[in-house]
Length: 200
Image (cartoon, helix red, strand yellow):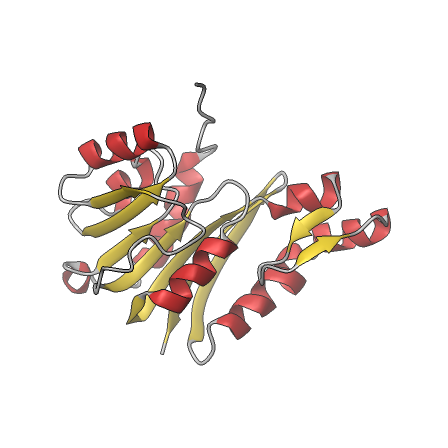
């Protein structure tokens, strides 16, 4: 079985995360839990979260085995990341890294509804929904709403305003009463990469 390459421009993903994680004092991060769905081979987790308490999941058993070897002490499960794979875990999470290739928001919504969260939280997203917007006209909004749009003009508008009109306003409302402290984002072709620090 051939597995899809998980990362393009990995250094840019890491830089975005490092910039936001710098808002968390190192001494305070020890012992905090990090949720890493779509963990793949564990490369981002090994680079950024080694030494912290990691809870990861992926559908691919081979990649889960690789991630578990790279991250001694982490709890890594074979699981559908669009649900919450850790209902038995009482840890308080200070970060969650939704590095999905296509749609990270189902996983985020499951995490948000079920996980215990620290007072300050870093969240990271890899969002490929803009590809669906322009190529097929069938996509899912971050809220989970399915959209079918045949009109190319409206699809282009959704593509160009995806971050400003579709993602950011939804996110601010979804995490309320938490407040957005800082966000960073960038585009690479049809992909949106972004992160946020929120607090309550």
